[in-house]
Length: 312
Image (cartoon, rainbow, N blue to C red; front, top):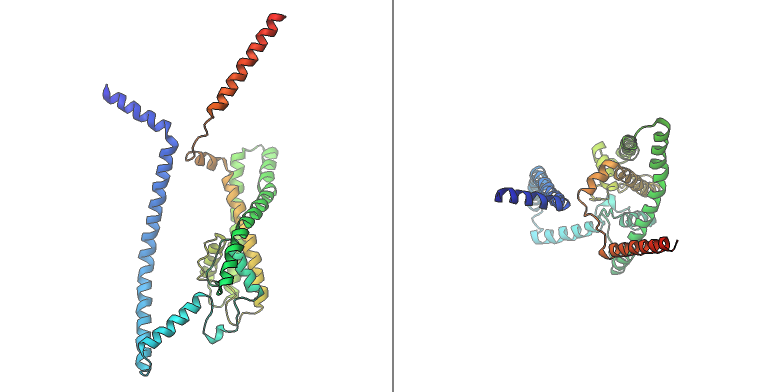
């Protein structure tokens, strides 16, 4: 008897807090996914890091042996200064001295990466005034960018998603859920072709040291606003039409970000995903005051109706 009561109370408790249990399972799955990624990255990249460290130590020791007049301390100071400058996008190499990081096109490219929260990190403000302006510019510009992207995506969704789905549903009589899934798949395929695969082929042809995988990696990291900064186009010393190239990359990043948001919003409007999201959301509860007002209005209406009926 007690066991049956306990089991029924547990079942009732789980049913009343179903969304909480779903959210707890979602949180656990997210943490496990983070741990899984950390394990894979560590196991794959750690041997390469160790090999690179060994090569650098060997080169350093060989350089000191060939230049006995140079002490290790002086070499360390020089390397530290060079690495600090490299973190700000300034290189001491002769083939990189002809490219400026803060001409107009490079500054425009930097502004687009800041406002889109991509942030490659290959270039950063050097002066205190530049850092202060970057804070103010980002604080105003990022919400402005979100407003612009939201308005643009909302307008594009009408012509790219809602009207085509409604047209197919009316003309062929297919279910909106089925048409929505097929449309989302086709739209994502077109976005991958025109904003990932084709640009990757273009970048692999224009950049000397990039293969197709490196170019595709750059396109995906950029359009997903991850922006690791290990690959940045237009930084080669012998880059032809560098200003025009940088301008084109800026336009590509903005258009690609809008297209990715359109695809994401298209998937979010699917009925299947809406049902899935509802599993983890808290249900909206009616306010007690509103219920009391409605009951009071119903009582008042019924009393008025009775009075009118008796007078008739």
